[in-house]
Length: 258
Ligand SMILES: NC(=O)c1ccc[n+]([C@@H]2O[C@H](COP(=O)([O-])OP(=O)(O)OC[C@H]3O[C@@H](n4cnc5c(N)ncnc54)[C@H](OP(=O)(O)O)[C@@H]3O)[C@@H](O)[C@H]2O)c1
Image (tube, rainbow, N blue to C red):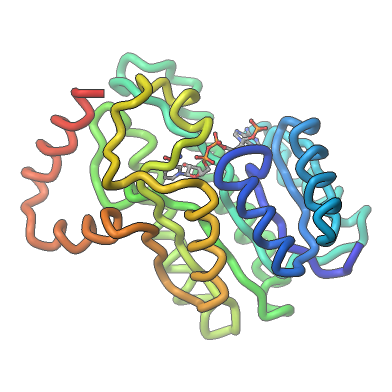
């Protein structure tokens, strides 16, 4: 295994699996993290069979206490240093916050916020040393309050704010820092969140492969923000002119229909 690697969390499905494919196709040695080891191993086999560097795999529940220590120890055993971190693992839950399971919502905060922050800070020195990159997967939800997905939207607002601020700190030290903000991407996300299928807006829809490609290119080009797709790009622009109360009411109306 090469001594410098790209660490990708949540690589067993959806956007993360596509990010693993595209980083490997670009020649990066990758380390893939998620809970489902069989999925990660199958993906590593597929990437190696395509003639790209074979990813290493760390099967780990990142939301569990001490999980980031486990990742660090596994990387140390491999004898590798991380030059790029892709914080992609995350999930949402659909429903009123007061009615959803509280512990699952707190676990979501742990994964989407605490783990992303922890991995960013743990590897910051290594990213600086290697003049590497940080790609954090936020969401179009980062720009909005989200009744019926209140905790998820709030976690993604944190991801965007934190990532932009880290760009301010790490950018001058030679690290590329990018926030990837997808709209609707058909993956396992919808089933995990508990959406009824088929109600997502076609305007915001993009495949996981297209989103990963945009994120990868955006990081290489050192873009602050990547908004994949025309529909998604319009939202932050339109939000500049809309009162927050109107935005809140509109999101509530859309979420009511799901
Ligand atoms: N799909 C969308 O519409 C959409 C839109 C905007 C942003 N996003 C963001 O994109 C990112 C990827 O989501 P996706 O759409 O690709 O969903 P996905 O297909 O459900 O993938 C989620 C990934 O996170 C991993 N994961 C979940 N819990 C974990 C845990 N406790 N420990 C380690 N890994 C864990 C899953 O692997 P295991 O189950 O094997 O652990 C899986 O690899 C998320 O941050 C999501 O918020 C998605």
